[in-house]
Image (tube, rainbow, N blue to C red; front, side, top):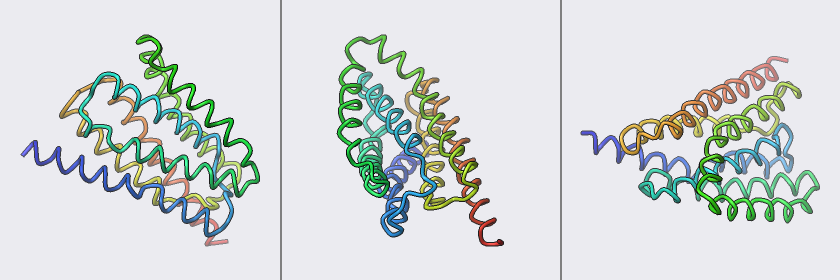
Length: 201
């Protein structure tokens, strides 16, 4: 029974992550606008994902517990390129590539660097959600922000809480997923609130 639940959680997480950023990318490309989206939020999210992936790989955690991260990271990079293109800031792409590439290499120069980065990873990822919330609060509209993408993110956090409890039971990882679940739900509710407000105007 436990093995079936673990397999179901893993497979459903991978399936959701394969399309998670799709609705957001479609919204941006269709509107040819990144209105309502926070570049700062996306960059912080990408940094958090890269640290988390590097941590899982370094400690040889089971592949099935983090297989979705390369998929999400690839989608985040594509989404970032769309946002930079439609906001006329494509020249910044090379700068971000150098920063993230250098960071990926430096994380494993020493074990203490990676452990410290993992401790900050939750704060970095939480800051990405708060940056998106702040953007929504400032504009008071959801713009091209996809509620479906954020709700899918909440689902994957919930399933990863289950899989972490059943496999590694790593407290730092659990705290990260619980925090991200709460913030993803908060962003989703905020998007839906502003969408409803706009419709009633």
